[in-house]
Image (cartoon, rainbow, N blue to C red; front, side, top):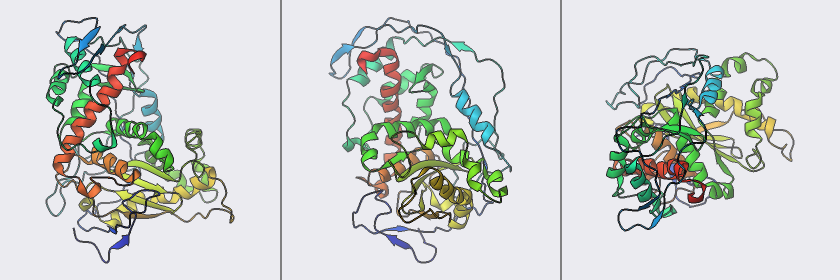
Length: 434
C-alpha cells in the first residue's frame, strides 16, 4: 500500500484508548479512491416485515434434550407459546424516526470499481440511493414462533457450548457445528423471531451475516454493534469507551442543511430531544463516563467504515476495511460536517474544562494504516465492526493487521451462531435458562 507523502507515525493509533504498546504503526493517506463527489446526507432504512410460516416439520412442546457431541443435558424449552400476539413491526418506530430526520439531498452513483479493478462494497441494488418511508398502514399481527424439533436440537447443541472468552475474540477454526446450524435455518429462512434483544430477526438475517462477501445493511450493523457493546461492557467501561449505533452519525448528517444555514448559535440545531437524551444517559455521559466513542458510518450507501472519536484528542480515526476505495481528500469531504458538529455536541453535554470554555474548531481526521484490507469487497460491514472491537480493546491478538480473508469468513459464521445462541435461544427457553 503506497502512502501519499510522508506517513504519520503514531505509536498508539491501533491500540485504542489508554493503551501504550510502543509499537509504531502508520496512519496514511492512500491513493486510488474513486474520486467521487463527497456525500453528506443519506439514509438507509430497512424494512423486513416478513410473516412466518412454521414449515412442514412437526411442531412440538420442547422439554429436555441432550446436546450433540457429548454435551450436557438440560431443560431446553418450557412454555413456548407467547401470552399474547406481538406486533410484527421490526424497528418500525426507530426506522420511521430516522427516515424523517435524514434528508437525501443528492442521488449518488455506487462506487463501482476503482482504478485497480477492485470492486466496491455494495448490495448491487442499482445506481441510486433509495430512502424507503413506511406508510401509516397498521402493522400486521404475528404470533410468536413455536420451535420445531430440529430447532430444539440446535438450541441444546448451542447451550452446551463453552462460554465466550477473549481467546475466542477472532476464532481461527470454523465451528464444527456450523453446517448443522446452517441447515436448520435454511430449512425455514423466513421464520421471524420477535423481541430478540429489542430486534425482530428472521433466520435469513443470520444466514446473510454468516455468508462470505455478503454485503449487509443497517439492521445487521446495528445488531453487531449492540452485541459487541454488551459482550465487552465492563472492559469498555474500564477504558472509558462506548459504542454508538449507526443512527448516530446518520442523525448528524441529516442536520447538514440546517447546520450550514445557521449563521449564529449552531449548537441549537443539534439540540433535539432524541440526541440530548441519548448523550446524557446515566453511565454514558460524554466527558464524565466516556472519552472515546466508536460509531459505524456508511459511505455512498454501500461501504461501511468504523469511526473512533476521541474527545480528549479532538480527533476522529477512520477504521476503513478497504482504504483503496477513497483517498483522504474524499474521506475529509465525507466527514466534514461531522467534524464540524462534534465540538458543538461536546460544548453542549460535556463538563466545562478547567481552563475555560471548549473551542469550536472542527475535529481532525486521520485514517489508520497497516490494518487488514478487505480488497475482495463485500465484508465491509462485519469487518468495520471487528476493527472497532479490536481497537476498543487495545488491539489484542491477532491484531487488526493479523486478520485475513479466511479469518473473516470464520468470524462471520461464528458471529451468526453467537447471536443466535445469545439472543434467539433465550426467547424460547425461558428466563431460567438465560
